[in-house]
Length: 377
Image 1 (cartoon, rainbow, N blue to C red):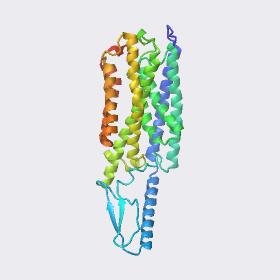
Image 2 (image 1 turned 120 degrees about the vertical axis):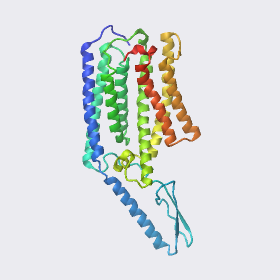
Image 3 (image 1 turned 30 degrees about the vertical axis):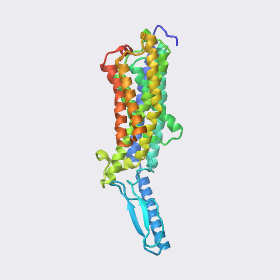
Image 4 (image 1 turned 135 degrees about the vertical axis):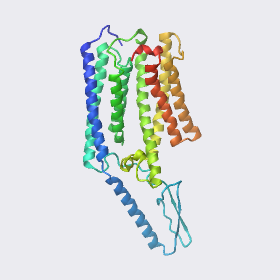
């Protein structure tokens, strides 16, 4: 891309205004999602439980009517789990009916944030519409920033953060457009985007300006854009991992006879979320899908380093922590694939890997001096 020698102050100012406007709309969307979750109906859970109870009663009644002889029922329960009827076998006297046990609805996805409440559902739809509007303003701000200096708009941490937040929201909206049942992601996504943009505008902001000669390369578009995409995907997997741990803790608490969710939260919130196993699979699949792209990001950075500095690898702090992040995610995927690690142990590994990525971005760029410091805060 041709690099202009100057900066267009009007476009730079327009970019700032569009970013702040997007933040305002994201804030309203966040409150709409909070309304959706707070006032979402609990009825769907109650209706489902009632239907299951009715089906169980009908099954038992049919068994008593059809089999006049005495039937012995043996229940095989999971560790600390409650018992649910999963299969009924009619037999003669002395026969055994084996039923499976588990922690209730651990493999059943909840009805969603709104439940069966029409008002909460309307709030959720309004939140999605506002999120799309904010995304358009957000994208306009990024484009204006790039046009103000006639280059790719991710040459420093402020610009990278704006693009990273845009990627998170765009991925969420794309999943909704594909009719995926991910509206539960709306609240954590808007919160994360606001935090990212807040840090970008208040801590990381730099004026629109030209870059140092080392960044005048087509590798800026390739290397940094893939890093942005990977960051958004890793964050989505991080959300899924946290929700998995929360939902699994909730299932364990319900199995133990407790009446509240983790940290005293309402059971209604957790019952409306997807099953713990759904979160676990989602986190694993996202990390497994993005890991090859993160590998490419590091390789592309090494090629760019050779062109700019004459060496592929010098163990610069950014290079070192990028490799540490790669090794952490590799360990997580290896443990899942070969050691059979699933559930909470794998989740803790995934959290540790994301912590490495987070430090690689914020910690290394802010607190550690290296060759990547030329990009500025």
